[in-house]
Image 1 (cartoon, rainbow, N blue to C red):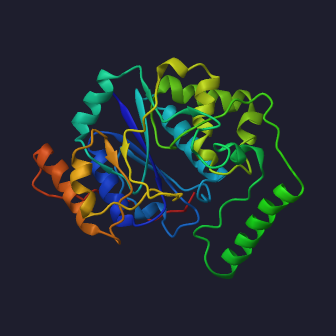
Image 2: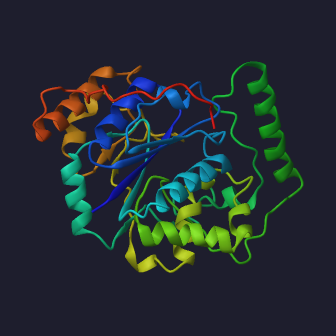
Length: 310
């Protein structure tokens, strides 16, 4: 079974390289670096199975995230893999590469992606429907200084105009589905999404100015293209959420036993600037299961010569 891991990266090159190095020992790894970040292509380790692009400015939950994901899907699909996994640079595997391969060999026809019809019960006032019926600018999260201040003012101004002017975007022709934006799909599913946006460019454009559209786009596309019966509503990720938070909580040592008891393939999110010990503990588990002495993946792969940034 040939597997491609698609990685959305935006920070901490050391943590990212540890992840990429480990995965590249058995899988092809396709990395998209956020153009808003300080990361450059020659910061990422190179290997015949590591492919890096830096094309899109990715604001949290924005249309840029969809475009970055589509770019990775298209690049990897051109090499035709059996399975595609979308993860973030702050994920960490909980199983060995061999165990991951075995799992998908045993579920070769299943599409693993959280997917629920919208409106989603218990999600906000109207079950996420405001995400697709109002207009939103990209989130100002992570935009520094005065520019960030202006961005936030513009964001809330547009949000307010929606309410005051009773603006509602039409949903005719769309049945929306949503869930976490991290998934594990077969080639048939990935190709169906790519074919849909090529065949119906208006489908892709509908997600512009949509809040957290990356949690709706792929789910909606898969249902539209007939994959409902193959979908398993699971991201296969261990995450912890604090009540009312828009982001999963950064995992810490206190979470270790719950993580270890999980059947998930990956955990997120890991931030070594918050708790480096949990990262080392989880890598140690993988190293022990693999029979590797080094508790962290080797970072000795050759680096590329400096070159122009695409």
